[in-house]
Length: 295
Ligand code: ADP
Image (cartoon, rainbow, N blue to C red; front, side, top):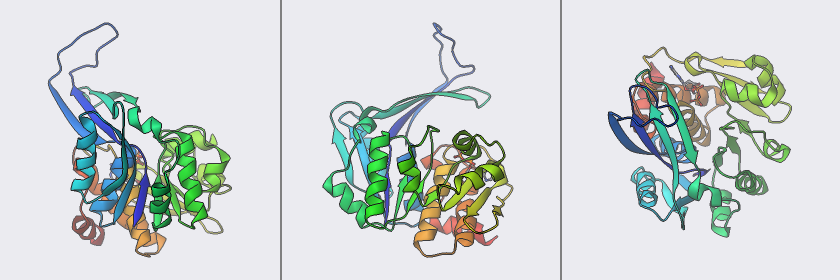
């Protein structure tokens, strides 16, 4: 199984012609609520890709809590490790303008309470074949997860997003680091992904830098970097492309596929996800990934 320790947010998306300025009130054209958050996105991506997935995190005791839980459970994600805590669920307040630009306020809500693991969380991580981590939970919670994984010999895949400085203890406990090119630059100070990747290998044994439509670059100690191209597709919404990639990669590695094959499969999954709108609503099922990966 794959364990995901991460965020659950309800995305509250308002569509407007032009984003409002301070003090301005305007009428939007449309509104949608969509379950999201990087943890939820990765859990659903991995489950749709065929993984057995257990989610660890927290939702609030508001109306969004059950909807977030149901969205995960509806994709066969085990939510026994998703606790309900007093107060609001995590929310992302998103304004999308007619040019497709967006501005986003994330209020962590219940996610902020995940600063330590329960004995049940630790058991779930110990029983998993891999642990997926991102940085939308408090750093103390992320570190506790990485430490539990390390103690039980469970490999960790960390998406270092949103970009924040990382404590050494976290990279020391990371097996595969999955930054996009901006996060790689923020972590290393190197804009060139080849330089950034080499620098990150000092701290982590394997690094995959995702490059949007250009695919990704894979670095492992003692080997030449490998370029993994993405299929040319018409992208309509790249939200959660990286989360789809991470979820599918964890599934493929968990099945024992060699890294080159696992990366090609995850790349096919991510390319499918950008051809549809939304985060979790755009993620492909296993059969679709298999078909795309054969082309
Ligand atoms: P993030 O979503 O975290 O910013 P990227 O934009 O680098 O990450 O995308 C992650 C992966 O999704 C890429 O490595 C690539 O495989 C795939 N992807 C993203 N954008 C496209 C695109 N326009 N066409 C095809 N594949 C894409």
